[in-house]
Length: 257
Image (cartoon, rainbow, N blue to C red; front, side):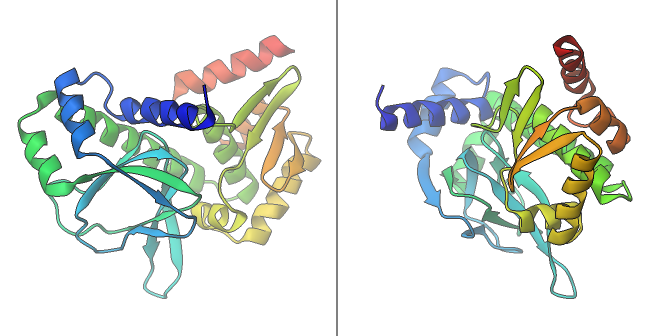
């Protein structure tokens, strides 16, 4: 398979993951509507308080949902990854801007057409609802992570979340006999904004986890996790990313030992 063909196959897999279980005829209609767009890192996809004309599905890369505060500071309130939908159907302006945190490919649908089709397609409506529920689950995860006073505990929770909810992203997680490599897929600045702190505090927190023997920093955006049990304790909650998935991770770590 050529690189282009492989990329198309991967994009199709992600596209289908957002619309899992829908009727083939429904999917065929969506295929006709879909227009694939590419965004460079830093590009705005939808502006804050803008009534967007599209509904989108992330194929690859990461988008950030961002809010401008009263004092002008910008705060990242969530991430969108492959298979995630965005765009307010049946609603007006969105409260957040959506920007490309990395190079990203997105399948976009004209909003009016998508809404009209949604009204007559119960299977599509179900797929959209499930996607919304998944996003709510992730929002709950962020609340748990941000409730920690220590930045090192927030980093621990974020690494646990990457290993559980985001493990299906390309090249994000690599298992080894004595641990797990986890790639942090966003910039240090974006990570700081996401966790409600400063980039230098993120750096200190990562080194604190390394000093405790929980991780080893291989590169600025790549860490080797030695002990997920310790990260779960520091995060203060083993339910980050879903109780069953985190339990599976910890059981797997036990077997490695």
